[in-house]
Length: 496
RNA sequence: GCCCCCAUCGUCUAGUGGCCCAGGACGCGGCCCUCUCAAGGCCAAAACGAGGAUUCGAAUUCCUCUGGGGGCACCA
Image (cartoon, rainbow, N blue to C red):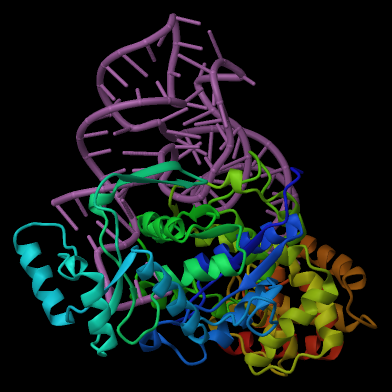
């Protein structure tokens, strides 16, 4: 692979909600690059907005990341030489740099009230102007500003955006992007409560933490010029910027709304990582699926383990266009990964789903049914639905469904009786022992295999769709099988 | 409204001027296999948003339009 210097990258979410697949992808790409180059991946918490703080969000975030197999080398919990890694604990650091910006003439205190700002904004909107700060406090002399600050007057710190000229920034996926400085505003860097806003905090942290590559969502593209301007005003080196395309809803029309995200779970999908395990998804499938939304390796390879991704990922092959979320493809990947599991692994992973369904699923039996449901599972969560009958004492087929297609109840009852006779003559019911005599019975009965086996299937499993019949019978055991067939025959006779 | 970004099958994508009357994958349809359902195998339908320009030659370069997306907070 291309020899690259070790990178220092970071994932810096705010603890305001659940980790969704977009965030997971951002974290993943950062992680991959760090692993590939032998660098470090840091986890930083951007919690400068106390109002939006959600209790437990940080814990959930860490669990989601770990479930996906993404470990961080530095940051909250694990520590490191550049802490603290929670922005709320770095207030003094940001203030120090804000003061430096003011001292150097790159920023200024602003005493305007929120109410006045609101009035200015509505006025500008009425006049069809671009809403922006009108510059009242920018015009203040540094001496007067300093005096008012010293007097304890409430204020924010604004960035003194150049009025003239243009700013050119470079995004790795899109190349040079130039914006006129006149379209930029004097953004607030520090709030009146003294806490920095993202723009300042993130730039200071990235610099102090030695971040070499900033890989983040495309929603930051619009503020990239501001970020570059801050970095240049500080006299720091710029990191490499890579802005990942946003995820669109499955229709491709727009971003997923809060409401739509919540509704997804009704049909077994979710964009929140915390839901995915319960929905029967494998973390390996999530990683593979998400990695391929906005990145590709070549024109045909689709299956990538985490190790493959670490080896093959490259920023150069990132795609800047927005991508619609495709859950059908997700399900496909999940099936692929389920099928690639060993029998032991599969048995382990489906056990909790049986328990959740109220079934006591013992490992020896699980080990026996795993091979026959293996390739029938699109999700782990389907296991109890497909194979629950193995763990139930009784099976209660619908009387009306017991009779086979194009057969009367009487005919079906006869078949059940005959089958019972044939099978009860056997010392045990295994595919090798039971299938040959049943096949010859089918031949001389005049019915089709589908009809005969269909009757037995529903009698024995209670389901119209099941794993292979004789394999299932062997696992259920001779006594139970014979009893269930007998009961079905009686029910059928009652119908006739 | 303003600024910025993006634009290949329904969806994810390959494609960096001739290897492309565009390749792979999901899904869809058909066939095969088959005790049901899957899995598997095979086959098919399906795209370069529009218009200009450059060029011997354009999906690939440039311009305009159109469409889509993101952003315009004392949120991140």
